[in-house]
Structure formats: C-alpha cells, structure tokens
Length: 354
Length: 169
Image (cartoon, rainbow over the protein chains, first blue to last red):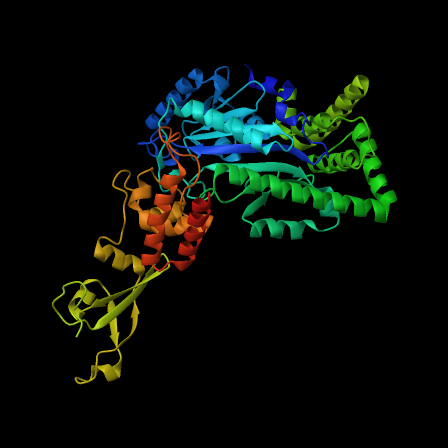
C-alpha cells in the first residue's frame, strides 16, 4: 500500500455515525503496554527496539483484528508522510519526531492501530465515530487480549501494567472524546467547564492531543488517572462527563438562538457561503468556518449536509494531506489556495450526491 | 544521651533533617560522622561553652551530597542502572524493574498522580478467571492493616469503605 493513498481512504471514525447532535466527532481508547524483561523503548538499544518490532509484527499476524493490517516503519517515511499519519490520528506527534526503530500498524478502516516503540513498546488504539466509548474500550481490550496470548506484558499485582511514565501506570488506559463546543466558547462558559473537568482529574486538550492548540472549537477530553480505578469505571466516568458537557452545550446553543438568532444564523450561513466560494483559505480560517457550519447542523439550520462529509473535510485539508495529494511540497500560501480549491471541489461533489 | 545514628558509638551532637519525597527524616550524628558526610556544622556561639548542650542552628547541605555519602541514598535500578535522580530529570523510567527498585518513592508518586496507588483494573492472563471478591477482600484487609500501621488514616478510611462495599455484596 502506498501511503499517499490514505488521502483517499475514508477512515471509519470520521463517518459521523453515532453523533446524533453533531457534537462528539469521535472517541478513542488507547492502552499502554510493555514487554516484561526489556528496557522501556526510550532506553532500549536499537537492536532491542528492532527485536521488539519483529515480535509485535509476528504476534499481530496471528491475531484476528490485526492480521490484515499495514505496517509502516518510521525510517522508511519522509517527514511529510509521517505528518500525514499524525493528521489521521494514527500516530502521535511524538512518534513522528522520535528517533530509533519505531513504526505503526493499522487496519484497513483505520479503527485499530498499534504504535511500536513510542514511549511504551506498544500503544494500542481503537478509534470510533461518535460517543461510543464502551465500544472503543471493548475493541482495544479485545486487541490487548489477542496480543497478550502471544506476548508477555510487564505487570505487577500492586500496580497493574507497568509503563515508561508513571502517569500511565495501572490500566494504561487513556480514553478520550473529540467534542465540538462552539456555543460554550461563544458564551465564554468554556473556561468554567474546563476548570470543572480539571478538578475531576480529566484533561482538556487540543485537536491532536497533548501540547496541541484548540482549533475550530474542537476539544479533546480524556481521563488523567489510570491507577486505582477499573477500566469500566474510567469509561463510564468519561461517558457521564461527556453527556453533561453536551447538555451544557445544548443549553448554550439554545441561549444563543434565543438571544441572538439573526447573528447566529448569519454566522452560520456566511460560513456556508464562504467555504463554497473562497479562493484562499488558511488552516485556521477554514477550521473556524467549518465549525460555524457544524454548529448550523447541530442547530438544525443546515439540513442534508452529512457530518461524515464535514469530518472528512477537516482531515483532508490538513497541510500534509494537501501536499500528499499534490505530490509536492507546497508553501503555506500555495496550500491556502489548494485548500480552497479542494473544499470547493468536494462541496460540489457532495451537492451532486445529495 | 543519644548515640550517633551512623557509628552508634559516639555521642550525637548534630540533628540532620532532610526531606526525601515529602517524608521528613531526622538523622542524629556525631561530629566525626557528620564531617565525614560533608555536613558543615555551624555551632552557635553559646553552644560552644562546655556545659551548654551542643546546639546546631543551621546545617546546610546539598541533599545530593548526603545521598552520595550514605551510599544507599542514591537508589539505582539493578537491571537498567537508572537512578531515581535520573528518572526525576527525564520523567521516564528505564525498565519494568525500576518499579521494584524505586518502590517506596513510586508508591508516593503514584498516589500523588492518580489519587490512589493500587491497581484495580485488568489482571494477568492466568488470573483473569480466578480473581474473585474473596481475593480482593483479603488483599484490601492486608492493605488496611498496613495503612493503619503507617498512620495513613485517609487511605485507611478509603480501604475500609471499599471493604464494606465488598462485604455487603
């Protein structure tokens, strides 16, 4: 498989399925796992890192969820190709940047992936559309079970699964939702919500996780504690919290519509028009306009625009996706032109479909 | 008269207090052992009088120095040779055995990070079928006894609540 072809692959987590309110784009469950008797990846020798990759690949071949998965070794990829995987949420920015023997394994619809030799020997990930936190946990749990029948994980009775960083010790489970909260941002209530989440030991981050900015009113909410709680408790708590935030967002949306319906409608429809006709779109501009359109869908103002279309647009307009499609390095100015072109073209195709 | 905590022979004249991972430890030392450990003893002028008890007002020492002098202060993992100090710098442990080597430090660190330091999630493959409430209860009771012995009453209260829930089932 040619990595640039991923640009044309519709990842299943972008389908918009299970997102009745147009709020929760996706949810992701990841498990940190390490081999017993080996140094953790950052301290392991290149030789050991290589052996770890070999063992993971041979175990993955025998396990049903991953038997047809594609593997990419980071050393075989250009910087832009690695960034393409980051944009598709298949690898972390840290894996793209790190040195040594490392790679990623993912299945055809990109719902399951395994990062090898990031901070931990393995990072198993299941990513699903909408608020399907329990299903995401079950998928990654099953993958863990399949792999651990072949491999020996480092774990202790007292502290559970042992990880390179003590913030992951225990279950090694980090579960997150990617949620769109435009009204809470507009009404300036988001800060209060964030404070509340932090006090409950839940983290709020940007689009691409740790250390990334919030763009297009998209927030990633995840658990902090991984020890002293069961996996089910973590998953249940995140579901509960997400539903609470969704109801806050709905209230804020209702307030906006009641207090300033003309302004809100204007914002939505202007964005709808600009996206279909603009000739230059910066990444930031685009994400903000798309956020307004998504809000229009949530409010029921815009009808017949599938969420899957919006979600996919959000990924294919990222810088490395634009470069992969152009099969060339592009300057920022060139990208802004191509981004606008791509959005117009995709929108026209979408109109043809509906 | 207290004896020196190191040589256990001479009279202790220096009380050295240091803090390791939030736990205050006081070590009583004689003059000789203190100077061997590079602890600069600043004796208050009044205390220099023969009949007056020896008072040590300020002892300034870099913690690292003492740790080095004590030998056992610098904890190292026997498997990957990472020291606890190195771990604190880079924030990543070297290998799974580091968890044993730094057990007492990690016990507190994990509690600070997660608000708890006992795993309750998925267990090992072979234990997946056998782990029942009885084992869990036994483990919790052991932990409770330990928490009480350590006077960790907050933790003890949490454990007691968990035991009650399990017993109620």
